[in-house]
Amino acid sequence: MSGYSKKDDLLFLPLGGCGEIGMNLNLYCCDGKWLMVDLGMTFAGENLPGIELIFPDPAFIVGKRRDLVGLVLTHGHEDHIGAVPYLWPQLGCPIYATPFTAELVRRKLVERNLLDTADIREMELGASFEVGPFGISYISMAHSIAEGTALRIETRHGIIFHTGDWKLDEEAIVGTPASGEELSALGDEGVLAMIGDSTNVFNTRASGSETAVAKSLKKIIGQKTGRVVVTTFASNVARLETVGRIAGQTGRRLALLGRSMRRIHEAAKATGYLRDFPEILDEKRMMDVPRDKLLVLTTGCQGEPRAALNRIAAGDFRSLTLSPDDTVIFSSKIIPGNEHPIGALINRLVLDDVEVITEHDAFVHVSGHPGQPELRDMYGWIRPQIAIPVHGEARHIKRHAELAKEVGVPRTLRPLNGDVIRLAPDGPQLVDQVPAGRLVLDGEKVLSIASEPIAERRRMLFAGHLGVSLALNGRGKLIVPAALVARGIPGWAEGCALEEDVRRTIGETLAGLGRRNLLDDLVVEEAVRVAVRRILRQDTGKKPVTVVRVLRITDLK
Picture (cartoon, rainbow, N blue to C red):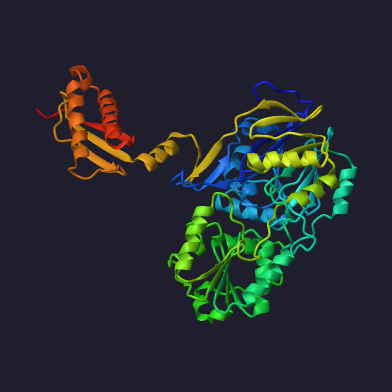
């Protein structure tokens, strides 16, 4: 921190998840020691070519890693654990997780050859344990994944209730969430601050029960006479359980498609879930099953280009093709920002006369996040002195803060990533700000989103690329015409007027350089680069990435 160093204060610092949905990284500080809660990621969009994953930049806490006492994970969704295998080596602290979440993390660490290095401390559901000056208790909550938990964080300044991702569901299919009575008892202890999920704050209704959506899905699937494909978030173990039961109840064979779907299935089985799940059909045998006897559960509900459903729709999945009278059910929410790829996927299916059912057409999905009625109930039970909304875009966080005031919370604060917030004494107060950047996974390298390779690739995406090779003799004269390689430049073709303009510009630039400059390769390269970019901008309105290289041949007379 730049100017704030009072070790007696209780601090909260989000480095990810505020002003955005995803990339959750939260820090608490007490007695000079730091506790990290969650370490997530998000998926890159079309504006980052070649990039799939984005992480919060942990540079601030890496600089204080000696005072980092642990990383506590609330649940196994990618936006809460996805960055662990990539960023944990910079942290080196113990990782605390419940059994299912720990299993998912182990599988990720195996892929990065880190399993033998990482210190994973598996905690039972409901466990209480000490991490430095923090007393942690896991509180089971309903969510769209097994073992969603909130955290009761006890400090000498008071109790913090960190909600994690949650909803209320009295008929949960997986797990037993805490009751209103149990949460009210926590409120009776006196809660200093509630740090809470804002994702569904604009929903004026409760999220609904997984049991209710199971009944609706069973009815819909039972009426179909062709193949049925259900796509959902792979991590939604309750939905896996639901679809497995429906397969048995409707007499259909069940196949699982997608690497992440199989990974979640294996992790759930390994930790005691999906005990009555039906036998999984080998995907190579799907086309051998009568059409009215096949039920497929697959990844790809957000239109991910490499997911199984997109490959099926494109006709690139050898083991399964869809026909008229087949049905695809999107048992999922359309995440903001994914409307275009999902729409394109649905259109490809419709062009093949496949029936498509989404949450807008039928009751096929319930959210894992609280609507306004649930938030009001939670505040009524917990009764915090302070509300800090997190896990949302700016509009979500603003509305959540307003709702907290409406239900009587005395003090609220709307955080941004990098805000250092004093919770006690006399909180909440913004006391400092630290850098909160972004990292990207570029192949196998983790880079800053502002790094030159990423910036240059984006420029090439929007403006194209021109490579210029100049073979010069010892006096700086061209031996052969410049070699030009153009990619993505509008109007460029071999022998076109634009190419002639570039060649003429190169000749004029070399002619205008003095003798001494012509002998300096770096000066020649920069002068030609600037001149060529200028003519390209004049002719095309674009500023392509332009690379000029000089090959000096001095043995020619």
